[in-house]
Amino acid sequence: MKPVRRIILFSLILLLIQACSDDSSPEDQIRRFIDSGVQAAEARSADDLSEHLHANFIDQQGHNDKQLARLLRAYFFRHKNIHLFSRIDNIEMLSANQASVSLYVAMASSVISDVSALSSLSARIYRFELQLIKQDDWLLRHASWEPASIGAFE
Image 1 (tube, rainbow, N blue to C red):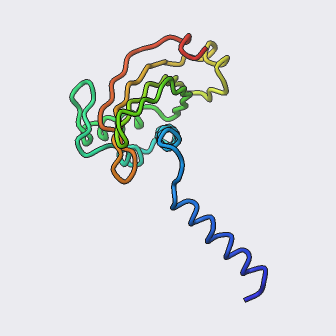
Image 2: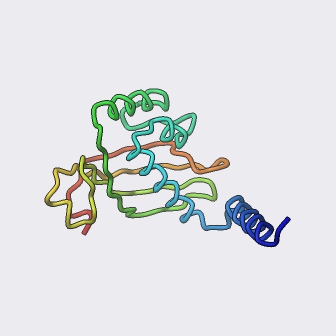
C-alpha cells in the first residue's frame, strides 16, 4: 500500500474511533440531540424524528410515539418548507441518565437567518419542556409546549 493511502486510511480509522468514543459531557450530547432533531424536522423526516422518541413517549396531549409520528407525517405533508431557529434556555441533569430541557423554537416557512429576522417573518414561537432519558443514546420521553413571544430570543 502506498504511503499516501496508508495515511488516509489511518486518518479515517482515527476519525471513526473518535466518533465511536463519546467523551463529551451529557450537556454537549443533549445539545447534539436537539440539533439533530432540528435538522430532521427541517428535512421533514418523520422517521428520523421518530428515532429520537423513547418507546414510552407521551406528550402533553397524550399522544404516544406512534401517534406523534403520524401527526408529524401529516404536518410535513401540509408544510413543504419548514425552517427552525432554536435556543436552549436550560439543561438540567436530573441524574446520569435523565435530563430536563427548556428551549424556544421559532418555526417559519422561510429561512430564519438570525434573531433579527424573526420580526419580519410570520414565525410561530413556542417554549418546549422536554424530558430526556439516556439508554444507549438520549431519547425524548415526554414533551410539552406553549406559545411564546419573540422576547424569548433576546
